[in-house]
Image 1: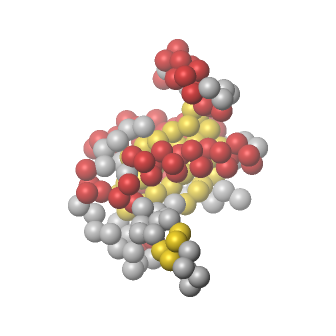
Image 2 (image 1 turned 45 degrees about the vertical axis):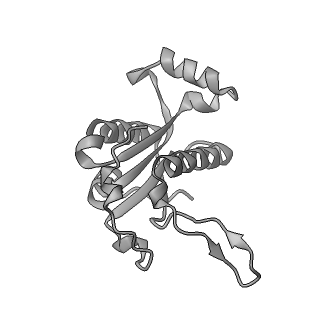
Image 3 (image 1 turned 30 degrees about the horizontal axis):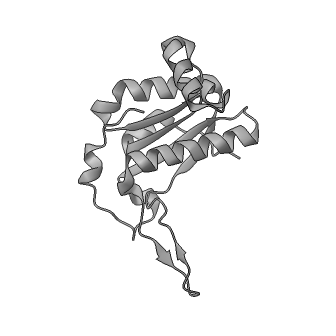
Length: 159
């Protein structure tokens, strides 16, 4: 994960605005050819990773009329987009290359992450592979709206 979220500390939390009017945008781009279960897993893992890295995106907990508490959700919203595998890789690589300059938080799920259920084996696989050898199932971008939209263009929603 590339972390350059200095801007988030100064971002005004606007829970009163629709997500389309916020200066920040969060997307997850997923390979549209993956089976649904792998897509759901990739989205969940990246959301957990980003929520941990940038806790400021999580809103306050809420209480329903029955008195039950519901943990906070991202006040920024999160749009899940679909793209071919080559586009996921291109977006990931471009975002990672300009993360610091553009103020992006970039998290990715390399394909090797879903080929093992032992985390140390995943880390070892990452250490053995690199750059052009890695393929990606999904990438998450959180940052200034213009930068995120420039990188993700007119990708469709994952359906």
